Length: 347
Image (cartoon, rainbow, N blue to C red):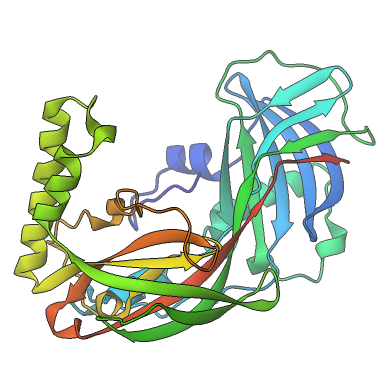
């Protein structure tokens, strides 16, 4: 887990507990395998605090550029904040089976050598000192590598065994992988008919279509009506419903103060797509704003499940559209995801 500290505040205890790897036991594995076209390397099992951690290294397909930083918060835009988000893929391991032993894991944490440099390098040094040379990656930039710890939070006894040259069975959980794209669209707010738009899916290496059905302005009155007159909330305690309405009341008051509007877009596609409005991305970040809109995406669902083109219907929320940008809606698509099913890998 990445440990954040202010410059000049690190002490020896922080260094030992968060930057060094000091397990009670290390069982070296040192085996490579391939998953979904990418090479991965099982480093070792370490035993510490009465539980095991499985350490895995993999290599990103390309090095990610660190975005330009704007150090003055008053000048930073939502776009710059969004672009700082890096796409990492963690393939979560559910269990490792060797012979009669099964090691189960219920959590994972990934460190990038590019963004947690020293912290990750100290751990990599530890594994190299255990005899794991990783010579097949000798000419690969360290900034492309990432280290994942698969952990078990339950106490388990220490076992004495060797895993080198043993047949291992890894069970991977279902996961989503993201790829960065960039598409910008512009449509009139009032549509006479659905509009077909396209993007290139890097996973399928082909263009795919989605159909925008229309836009609507969403306000507090519509939200309250959806809460009070919806059967799915009938068993929710009244105090919880009142709390939800209070939060949204504050949200809409915040929007009004910023001369912005919440806009919903209904679209038809093969999969949900993470759109964001250009107007919102280009606005300066308001540090004092209590904006809870990012949690709203789960509220909105279309009444119908399938559109006229046989694809699924989705509703996305553009959380902060400036009022002077309502005639023409500009929105962007920055990533596409693919779901991979759970998988068994023999190593």
